[in-house]
Image (cartoon, rainbow, N blue to C red; front, side, top):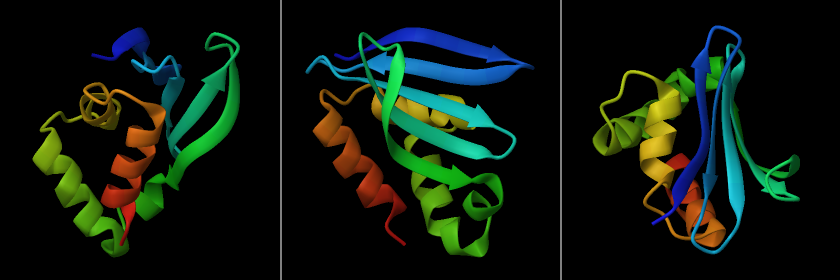
Length: 107
């Protein structure tokens, strides 16, 4: 199973780094402006590629209501950091994570 490398929820920021079984790492970061999930390189030190980025207004728009419903089916956590953590932690590879996010965010 994938593992949590770092997890932080504070007024200054919310983020979670996950290492998949295939060795790839991602960073889930939340800010007032939105959610960003990045692939990391060099042992998790540098963001290499954005996998998903969505603004908070978009995420809560009518267009993305089906996405919010899918996410709620996966996790009832009140915080989106925990929702994305619950979604991605059981996944074993970066490729599987991409496919899962694409499936959920296709509207």
